[in-house]
Length: 271
Image (cartoon, rainbow, N blue to C red; front, side, top):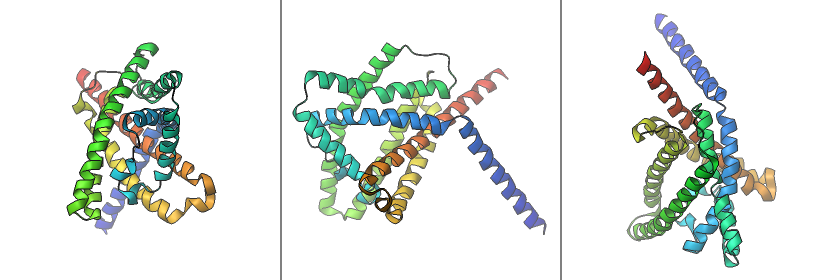
């Protein structure tokens, strides 16, 4: 009997902690911030893929992604690739300049969101932030221009002497490490203070774990839910929007976690 009572007490404490944690992130408006970032991410992704297409030609991103996990969003990515290739064929100077500017929207508003999450009064000047965002876009494009061909070549070489299932496992490990690196760099950039990589580790690891859980769970959900029956021709768009929204929620939760850790350290310093 005492053991049952102790187990019930532990259960109640765990439930209360979960509710308290959820309320904390809700009070920090993680879902609202995530929705805002998704909006600007969608504004940025099309012009970003246009610039990648200009440098790489046909991207064939699907060649480095495990199909069983990313089948749900691959139709929309393929559509964006096709549209980018069409636009690249007749791209003029004005289109290139405006598309480069549009592609900075995500980084710009990511930093603005970081100022909200961290409750900072240190607001960076708009023009300076736009320039920094443009530099980051150029760096990202150059890195992907090198990374995508190397990843495609590595996958092709692995497929010559390994089964596809094992190659998918290696690709998932590579993507997980890459996701952690991306989360870490984005967390550092979003913070209005000088954030050391070690100070952003907790939130970045949390984001990466949530991303992995979500991607696997979402792939299973799409297989059984059959969204095409409900949404018809626009199913790929709806699925992609949902995918982006929940992925961004995972990132914002990690960013809020880093903000909470910094606040705790600050209070401990002065106690």
